[in-house]
Length: 282
Length: 320
Image 1 (cartoon, chains in turn brown, orange):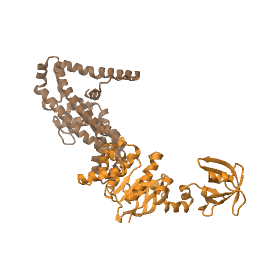
Image 2 (spheres, helix red, strand yellow):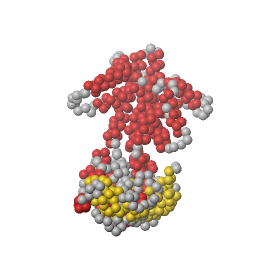
Image 3 (tube, chains in turn yellow, red):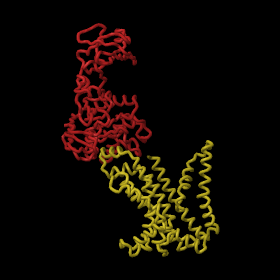
Image 4 (spheres, one colour):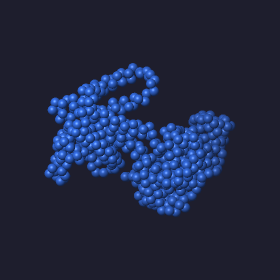
């Protein structure tokens, strides 16, 4: 659900650069724009507007009262902080994995290539079950992350792994090796080459991958609930919202969702601005 | 001194790129590695620059062991066919790159970069991004970038290969003049014989992973060791048992000592040049004449003439 928020946010931010001049669209461009807008409206904008309308329908006092309750605040804080951690860890690890896949030739590379996408293919509840079995109480690794915040982050890391890998990989493949060789012949060691030549070229891809991972983590439900265990201190926002729906507090659920939506928009658009600045330089 | 590469061999899987090649490049010379693509010349250049490691053999640059030394510690300037520009950095920062890595004082960097940009006529483009430059300008930027670190040797891999003919010619002249001013030991790889003959002090012809011949452009053009070198450096035709350059064949209207009889089968004018295709009893040579010569001989298709290699012509016995 949260994943689908990315396109309109980016599109809206881009649109603000218009100079105000009226541009005449060709018939084809007009039709495709029309279809895109209707599609996005039906799938994304209308449902989101409905959530916001429902969430704020009781007036600001009521809205504020709901979202500033202890449970809501804790859930939102845990979700946002975990998602930020997930985005940062993914940016680093995803880039590393993409690098290994593109640059190194080793036995089992093909297998690893397929394994990357498994978190996408697996039903999230199954992923959650696997996480619980492996890293829960009495798991084979001797770790007990059941009902802990690291457990939540771990589950989120699992389901968001492919994003950065898959956005960075094609960019890395398209990089000209002679640029790195030029830097080396000018005196740059491998680390300097990476930091000053490779990283600037792949930063936009890392940023979009991290944004996708963040978005997915903000809305993730299935993979987290089992290992989170349902205790108040490990309740993520989606779980909190679900709980409220089950208890019949639909308007309250919508209010908390509205807050999540606003935070997502802020984070994604700031990553988008960063991305565009990089693209303009590159 | 200069570059000393001894016994260099390099394989890529089953493909033999270089087979025990010895190369000596004197300090301050401009040397061209010339040969067909896939002949090993780029591989040899990359081995000198440390971008590839040889399977066997050693490289010394200015008397210092360079074999196995990574490129960043060889102090060589490398220029690539496709410019290898740092796309995210301005022209100024591209040129400053090597100096910034060496942590030179800002003022020194600024002065040196401006000197170099002036040298390559890019002063007014300092703040542009490489994507805003033409191909020729990008390559000049790449050259300035390589020269900024005052390399012991400058290595250029098909530096003009991606440029169109006009720019190519201009840059070629310019490289020659630049070299005459700077005297940095330079090796450049090309598959274009005209470029090699025009620019270089010394030519190294490489084919099938071996050096075929080394010498000045004149030596190689006039006294090729073998058919390959002769054919690669200029046009060759066969007159009887001899291989000879088409402009080195004398045409007579009457029998002469040593001349063989031939008949003209085709005449073709290309600007000022006239190409006459002929037939002798055992060969079908072609002769390159200028317009004046062709008119004086009143050459026509079917005409009977006598052909002989000029006295000072370089000739080789045709194999087979």
